[in-house]
Length: 118
Image (tube, rainbow, N blue to C red):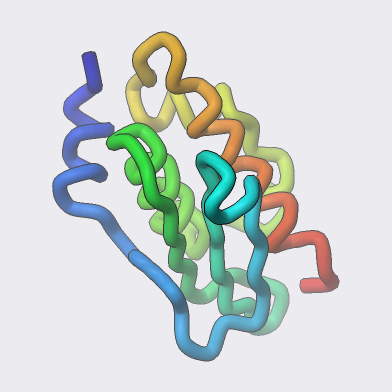
């Protein structure tokens, strides 16, 4: 069963991409070969000022993308780099068993989008 937080992000996703003017982009997974997520960040003066995501899949994947895109401009880049799948699941008030990979996908996308100098 999905938490109210997951369902809220699924039914009202925030910051769906792509993001015009993005300075950084990262994809986790392989488009067309299973679950994947792309994140776009606009980074100015060492901070994420805007973020967007795109994923195709279950409510958990949409909620994870929506959550991290909403969170990114609110925290430091250092905090984003240290974000874990467990953190994403906690912020979403849990994911059903077997959906943990969606949080892992979001965290991997963050690592890839931040793999270049910010």
